[in-house]
Length: 529
Image 1 (cartoon, rainbow, N blue to C red):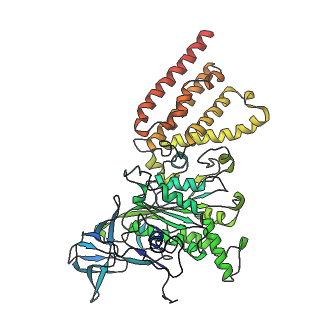
Image 2: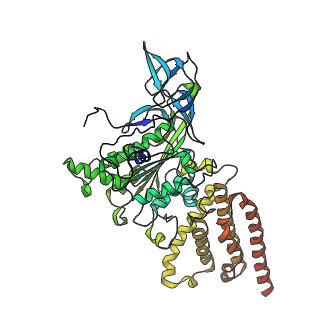
Image 3: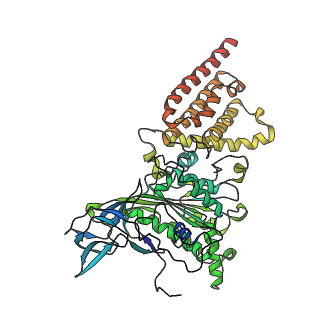
């Protein structure tokens, strides 16, 4: 064993995407090819392949004065991601030489004159994982990270550069929710960290991602993803390092001007690794045996998220973001345990998974009464754009209907729904439609797995139009039983399976049929009177 006398660092350069590593950036596929499935002690493989030649195209010019973060050139890393080669942070000077052609990551591509000495630059950078990469300025979070999941995008949106947490007990759907966000989020680069989870869950990601098509580029999802697999049977020290490795890779792509998203599944397993290491170091334990610095470490990780102006010359100004979604697995679904509580202090969005909803096969099993988003106020202007002018107003109305339903359910359990006035029975019916026809989604359906924002807006609009017309018709004297048995409700229940590109035409047809059916009910009521 030889001491490097250096902190744990990762290699940054072309070849990160479409790859999968363990928690200390060992390339698992390359190691598997070298020694087979059972890794022997002492096997070492470079994180970035030194034999691959990348086509480097210079974008800077010789003689140009550059600073850390400026572009030297580009490499087409995958079909969808152009890898920008950056001047390493902390370096500045004049470009003496800039080459074009095919190079490996450790070949010299440029020479830089800095403070009287020449510095050779390669496509490879190294960076300590526990130190955040520098940036110019942190910006307000004004753009949402759309996930294609209706409860997330409409009710509890996450901003690009924001942080979200998904706590939930066993079997509530944390991992499937993480997979959905990783698949459909409109970030350009995805870093998926399987931290202490079961090996077959990472296998599912590895098998599914290459088959799934990214709705934004039309290519498969692995073209924009990198996976860090630290399953429960891997070393504890690597598990503790894995989330730092993941966020360092995300920060590197953020510096190129990309929107990146991290899925950490699960931070509870990471905290358990921290507890185990702390115990072996004989440190004083805190609550439930976790180290006293658990809250500090968690906030250090989540605070590396953000939407920033990247470090570069003023002429090259660019904006990138790192969004973090962390799953928490509280034992027995107890949200009062230390990892959940400390995460809630730093996360901006709380998607609370409810075991009752999961037992009813309601996916996503996110409780609309317990969850919240602190970014809603910042995102109102973006959501209320010309295509969706009253988006937030509709969201607030649906939320108040669901809250009203929760109040009415207490009465229903005592006296039954038939004892309620017709207006309140109408409220219960529209709340059921919001829950089952809008919030519930099928993660394994080709169409319903992903829902565009425009489709979400129109789905919410038609449900609220039905509620307004139903209330008006009840006031006209029509019985609630006839309204509950309307034919249009069948079409509305199936509307989630209509593809986004055909939905506007279907929406117009449904609105016409709905108005006609309500008119028929009113006319029959008038004739019978």
